Image 1 (tube, one colour):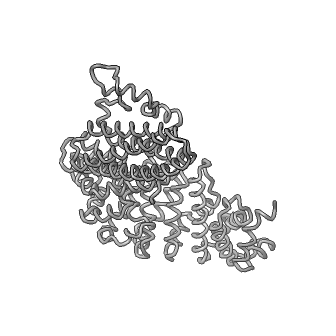
Image 2 (image 1 turned 135 degrees about the horizontal axis):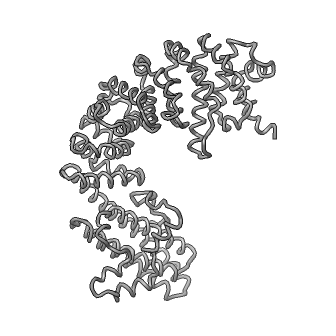
Length: 529
């Protein structure tokens, strides 16, 4: 027998609503509009206080403006009903029969209100939609009748038997509710995509893009749903019309979110999207903001974490133009965000293969990126330095890179990055700092095979910095990956200048096997407590 598990995460087409992620007071004020005592709701619905329009007695007031937010209403309602069903299960487990019945009535009212309001706002509900609505209402009525019977008896055997029936009914309500929400969302997304493809009105297209972007931010399942309805095709139709130039950044931002889905990347290939992106990126008439959003899309589709984007034939065909334009954006960026997005795209491209690295190196990337690092307006966060040091680490496998890095004072910058500190205490920034430390050490270890680089690093006090990271876990945020990279870099520099290291450091950090030094340093935090 299927038993409702107390959560709709497995049946609802979303996990958590970003629109509900607000401060607690705002959340409470929002909930006041819909969270009403069921007795009051029943009275207000049966005896409206206004003779002009009894819709005022519904759970959520309808306004002309709210009709433009049908999707938001649908998601909000879905979240509330899902929460109520979960609460019912929790009360059911404690045998709080009267509370279960009260909450069931409340949920039933929410479902009725949601359906009524959706039908009022939706352009045209299909026969299939009406059938699912009727079925859900029937299941809700059945659940209400079952819970009411539980309040009319105190016989334990009867209540135990009814509890199984209520669990079945809850599961049925959850499943039917999920199907209805999914069907409604599909219908809404189809309407938005059609709006993109057929409308010439800039405000209408802007509204559709904004709604689609909002859906992509509500979790992977909704993002996939949007991708499956061919939103990518509609977005590229917008991107190919000059009359919508002012909407390019918003359309590209939505596209970047969608391209985390394999389905969206396949659609991008089918509509020759890479060529369109290349044309926008290389067209000087477009704003820096637009080009930065193109860089974000490229960074997404070239992510090494997405295996299905590694062999985009159209990208390889246009790679030289794309790399040239991205380097130009890094060089001319007026904001840190533009430089960050461009460098992130370049960093991902360096993971393709050595040929991509050679191309980037030949285009003067080292000079451009190192100059950017000295400009606090362009590179002002650990996130940006993480992308740039990633590029340098991948380019360092090529012998010609050493001379360029040395000429542009790149060794000094790499040693400085060994002291990367977060500006805030956020976990994301601390994680970015860890990556900067690790990749800086990796780059020094790779470049240390060149005597000139090794001596330059030693001159810049690279050895004391590496020793401090090895011996003090708090300096490396207790990261084992940073420790391994620092030990490797230290050993490389020590080989070039063994006299520059104290004997105790030499005996503990350089001469033993790498694994022994690693174990010694990784246990230091415990040893000195």
